Image (cartoon, rainbow, N blue to C red; front, top):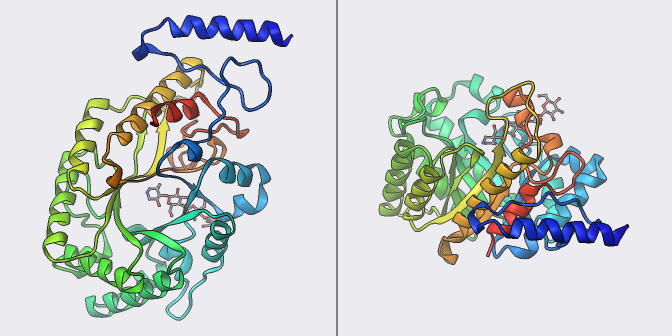
Length: 364
Ligand code: G3I
């Protein structure tokens, strides 16, 4: 049986090999085991990449599902807490922190020689309700945020090697988000954010400090505002080390726009983090969408395009590529996007998808 499979595999491979490199189709591989595939995937993401390969994880999934935990350990060497290291999870009252989940995740990473990317210290969307209700003035507000940053970064000093200090302060097009508590209190929100970077640096001088946002490489206005903030920070000695673009994109995201924006982002000279990578396929949000081989192939080629683009960075600017989740089974998009989605590299049964091979193919 195996010889027939092998011959079929070889013929298939020869058929695809005859395509020009650009149209090279990514074969849909099964997972490990002697499936007779002519060239089964053997290297994992973290084995091939010359930079960290991260994933957003949740404590309860690591605790409750062995396949999930094994997949994290097998494919990744960095983790980001999907929500447990945000203010809303840790800062439970004006007099108390709840570090349980954050401690678990940092401990898991330490036990398994993985890095942790801290996400995120200051995000308008994650201020705890009690904090917002307190209606502090700007002096008290900043004093409390400073204590929070000092306490949290200090607790994980030397263990959390990098932080998203500030997340998503610009609206589409690049104007300041005006619906945030920060904008209502500070005439110069960027000045406040710069001081937050300084508080984090004081708490852990060795941690790499990032600004993180979405659609950065697609939205020229937002990117211009980010670059202007970076220039101001650099001119004033604000300690910023890197920029994250979340890369919540899709198979139909314009690749030239992506590449032009990525090159512009890299021109800052900072570390570049693809921080929340997932590639939507059901771009029409159709209830009757079928994730067939053609769709798998489009997704694989999109992942390959992105990792190929990332590899064109100078090595000194490569930091990590992190996927926003481990398996399609638990993607945030199911609840947020309200449609069937299959955005990640492992399917709901933790098998490698063609997207996994596409990701690998783009790596040098
Ligand atoms: O697990 C608890 C559950 O025990 C509890 O009963 C329930 C009640 O509130 O909450 C559950 O936690 C939720 C968590 O997701 C896990 O599902 C939180 O409420 C919910 O706020 C949290 O949403 C996260 C969201 O950020 C807000 O923190 C999403 O998982 C996460 O994917 C999303 O990630 C953001 C990035 O941080 C920033 N970039 C955009 C990205 C997607 O929105």
